[in-house]
Image (tube, rainbow, N blue to C red; front, side, top):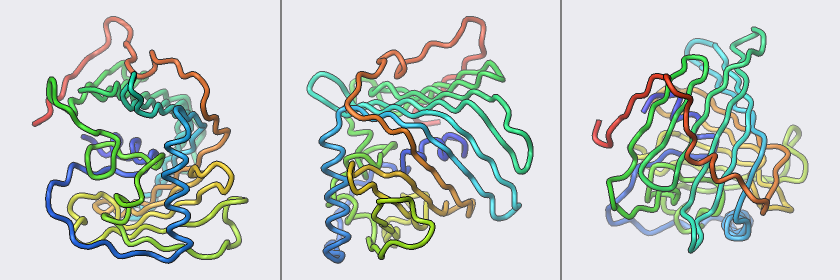
Length: 257
């Protein structure tokens, strides 16, 4: 997948392919870090749906360029009736000090085999296969699929992949949040596309309000801010399997490509 696909999905936190190997013993973090991890896990279990406005800021350290997109994200937790699904819509793009322009880009994961990317300006649709026909996967669980989310991850999975720490509140932190830092463990550095990640977790809802990380390959600093978060509301299920207008260019990327 392209870098833009990866950074778009990163606004929902991390990109990790499946890990199928024996894992070493986990290192327990301090008590406060564990409380924050547990709060994240409990929040994901509590809320069947989550919607939020999103600001996605990519600072390209090697070139000094910056790309900022604004949009909306919707997430539906797995239930006995439905798989885990998500939808991301970016409405605007600002590059560097330039003007904010309309540039609609959508990403939809249907909970099964396909991630769909729609670039409206180019009238182009790309469908990425993420599972085989009939394959049972856990696509949104850390270490089990390609799209892990910061909503409802199990504490044990987080500890398996990262060294976790916290610190007291500092100037500039979002109000009423707890800070969490994740350092990718050496044995997982080839499977995880960031060196470190910082998360600010709302004390009331237990959901992330801000995420920042350093991408391993590009060295880009990606900052994602969530606002106007709404939980438990009905989500239009049509978002997860969006249909493009007729006549647009369509590309299908098989799983092994």
